[in-house]
Length: 316
Image 1 (tube, rainbow, N blue to C red):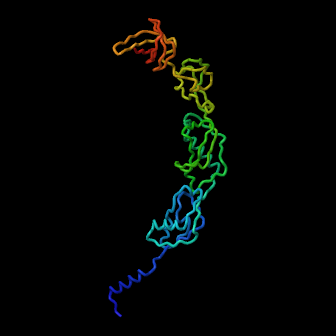
Image 2 (cartoon, rainbow, N blue to C red):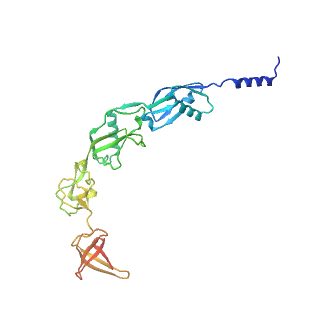
Image 3 (cartoon, one colour):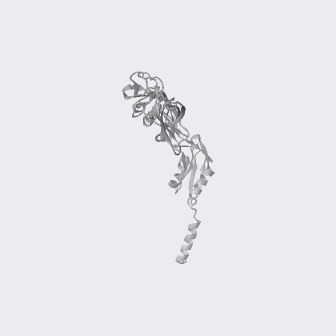
């Protein structure tokens, strides 16, 4: 029997189309552990067939719920495969459901303490101003994290943290993590050179450079102390400042531009007229503050607004 070339081609084409296409097989496990928040097909079962490498790397799910455990059905897995590779024929075998959870590893107290200490040294505003001493570190026992997540661990402090006294950090996995792994606290001391009075400074006295001396002090006992001498100079004592004691912010104030009993210049203004006179301040006055003044010429008490040192303005 003789066949022409086209006839042979048609026969071969028909025969090849009738041959079964080689299929891949996925055998699912009953339980699987993963080390991150992504689940790949290779994590939950065994892939057999010509597309083994491509199918094994298929990401089935990304979820933070994996930490608590999650169930994946065989139907769900098959659906994800068909969505990603509609051209492939896949046969599902094994367990009808896979329970997936993160594989956890313990992290030692020493590692957590190192993370906390390094974070304090990086974040504290006192790192360039004094010696930081970290004591009595409190670390929870039996802390576990997902396998492979050690590089993500970081300590997060409150934006209002002053890093003095009891200081707490949340240990998190990644900067966008919402739930902390644990919390660590410690007592922090800072030994720094701060300005203190050489001798007792009376109330209402103006603080000068000559009245101060720098002294090493544990400022964790004085969280509201002024630590820079420049912050003290020219300020007025609101109370008696004791020798050798740090000066608290609440114990000083900006001196007024006008003191009670000062002779002041009075400027009386209207839209068309300005009159200058002298008066005696009957009260301390700060910039833009309205104070009583006795006019020297008339003896009358008037009210004027402090506009400059020893100068008040009256409008009429």
